[in-house]
Amino acid sequence: MAHNDLLIEIQSEYCFRPQECFNSYEEFLAKMEQHSSKDLVYYWRRDSRTIEGAALKTSRPIAPALRYYSVRYSCIFGGQKFEPKSSGAKKLRQSIRNDCPAYIALRASKCGQQLVVISVSNIHNHDISVENTRNLAHTKKLSSDMKHEVNVLLMHNVDKKLIREYVRLKDGKELTTKDLCNIVASLRKNVLPVDSSSQSSKTAELTSKLINYISHHEGSIPIKALESANEIVGLDVPEAAESVFSEMVEERLLEDFDEDDSRDCGGNLAESNHEYVIQIVDDVPREEEIPLVTKCQSRIQERRTRTRWKAPSCFACGSNNRLVRAQLEVLRARRDKLREQTALLRLKKRKLQLEIEVLNRTCT
Image 1 (cartoon, rainbow, N blue to C red):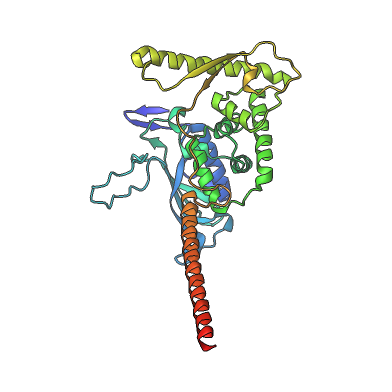
Image 2 (cartoon, helix red, strand yellow; image 1 turned 30 degrees about the vertical axis):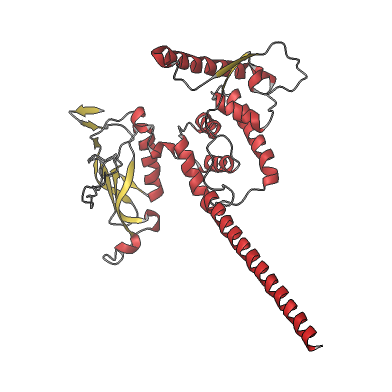
């Protein structure tokens, strides 16, 4: 890469060059994907004209494999600059776009059988590194198989920290908890309800598989994720993985203890709301079933000082808990009103019966 002040020009074998030809649109996308993965630059379709739209202005025959008569791709840090329409009272959302001049423009050839690069700019005005592209949506895009696995795990309420570590080890993608929450939100629209009788057993089975996979690949598991997994089911840890689990748990315990110790030494010992209990486990028989977390020599449990966060809506049917409670209150009020009306009708009935008895006596 050649640097010129704040401009960076990419010069590699994967870059696009003028008059470069492609026999199909898929061939162009394959070259662009290779260019993005090798040079860490990503593009979005800025402008395009389909073959059907171009047929209104030209009679040139174009192969259907090209898909577009003309198309222009711009760097995700540049392209179209949208002017704000607000008066300035509301704070505008920040954007990653900074008018990057890099682009790729293609057009169908005169014979209509190829896409030709008519102009290109490989000059970028932003830093290009792995750290800067790590949080981009393009680098977090999952394959179809991995996306299906993540959807199944989220549908059965598997711990999100375990899912993040599993995806990192298997697919090399650095997902965040917010990314998984966004996937859950998209699933709630078209998700099918899961049978409650088989949900707990399926969750335990999937959690056990994730724990075993992460342990065999020497991944890191947070303490809270292990504790939540231990609450779901007593996992049978393979003998080969027991030492790996002990090392991972001990390392995480030491890190947490060092952080809390350094924080308390700063004068906040009296203000700390966290209490810890250290439990030593010695010479436990192999035949007994022990929880996963107590298999290490020492353990630190953090006592919760607040209630656990509850989801505002049901994951299976998508109903809102507050809305359901409000509907129940309305139904209870209607029930009480009907009971009062029934009691009044019974009193009127008794009054009419007494009047009929009085009339019968007077007539006789």
